[in-house]
Image (cartoon, rainbow, N blue to C red; front, side):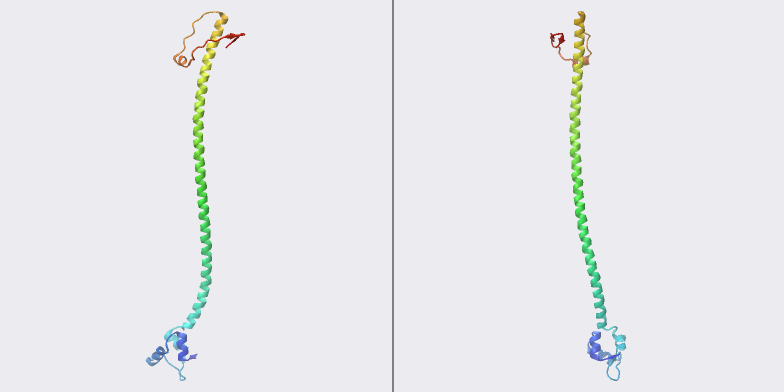
Length: 177
């Protein structure tokens, strides 16, 4: 297909002067009607710019839709990432809260164990005292029944230390107090 120098200049994006120089230098030939064959223009200058622009605009529109899709996907992923970060922070806060609760419960358990140990020690001491009082009362009661005066058995050092000081007891209607 043959085209004019002006049309060729526009399609290939070169000046007419450049085309005339190439003709004068013998690099580009013209037909008898002063037109240039498009194949000659392609040989010398490559593909026409308008064709490139058309291909570029098609590629650009395709890449624009692909880019738009990528932007949407990227935005969706960023939003999802932000949500996951918020969930992660929330879960970390819950873990910290639960650890604090566990520490509080462990402290309470420790305090309760100390209180229980003190109570058990007091119960043990009281039981020992009552047992000694009972042994002492039982021996006094059997002494009065038999009306035999016996020396009390000496207590071991441990029993003597734990033994209460004797108090006078009164008898009232057959019961010892």
